[in-house]
Figure (cartoon, rainbow, N blue to C red):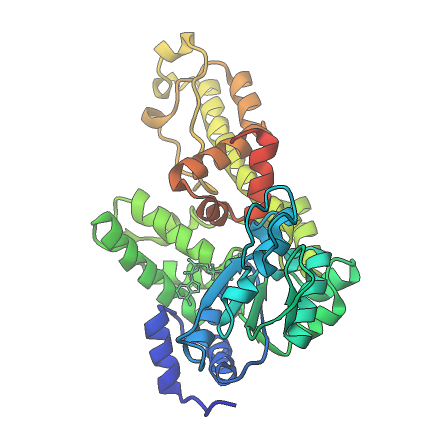
Length: 412
Ligand SMILES: Nc1ncnc2c1ncn2[C@@H]1O[C@H](COP(=O)(O)OP(=O)(O)OP(=O)(O)O)[C@@H](O)[C@H]1O
Ligand SMILES: [Mg+2]
């Protein structure tokens, strides 16, 4: 084992890797990472989506005797099932149609280094068998080969899926789970480290101020309390997105409680869906279903704010307050394209900014079309990022789900 790391070392690590926060649970996770770094033990990092699992393997590698050797991070969820064995273990020339050359896999090129298998629960069962063999014997065989090869790779895996649940469902091998989980590191959800929330907001606000070349947004004392008491289903990733939205959209740099509240989706407003969300909590951190559910939430939140605006408009019409409705628009059909990227703040109705409206039926139909909104969200995110991984992160779904959606919707 490596020597014990003092708190000072942990602080240095945070600085070096840009890790913000000082909660006991975060410090504990980093301490375990440091203690295990000097060994070759397998590490399994678990925690909800968006909690910051991806930095931990780098901390381990950089503090290990392997630090001058290769480090590869592989997203198992993003590699098509048909090629994953070849990616990991390599293949022989001619072993399948497109294998025009012999190719080395990660277990060969990462020899003496570290391999980070992110979203490890996404590995197909057949690949899990091969992985178990390498972990147990240090041996692997290229696809289409007969020669056994040796390798010395340190494995770190991460997942936001509850693997015990996946084992019960027959999706993950129990023996592999125990082999990977020699040292578990749990990255806590943000709601369990409330003291880090404002620190993170401040850091992200400063980063976005620099990025967008404007003064940093600041929270009023009440807004700080509201933020600390929010449950952040999307964890740090969600906090980062919210901070970016506020930084870009709000003119006033001091953020009041009321303004902030508009950016925090309230899940409890959706009783049926919320019930199933909390029901699944005990069995799964986040699955593809949960990812899709989150996307659905976003769509529903958008729809809710659309419907609120509609209600206000209809009320204004009933009360005869036509001054807020452009008369020319009365003759037009609706031209409604306002689809925000993420759960849109329920903004106060501003007549000058609303689309031209006469056919409220058409508007309602448009507002109620979930598949269309979902497609629009995905399109917008892809256009914005030009990168599937980033788009998937913003949408709060896995890359594999996004890949499937792109196919389903014919967006390629
Ligand atoms: N302690 C932290 N300080 C600063 N930024 C952080 C911290 N933890 C996470 N982040 C940021 O939050 C975002 C989400 O983190 P990350 O990608 O590691 O999540 P994850 O746990 O891997 O989630 P998923 O399971 O969905 O892949 C990233 O932009 C990351 O930089
Ligand atoms: Mg991740």
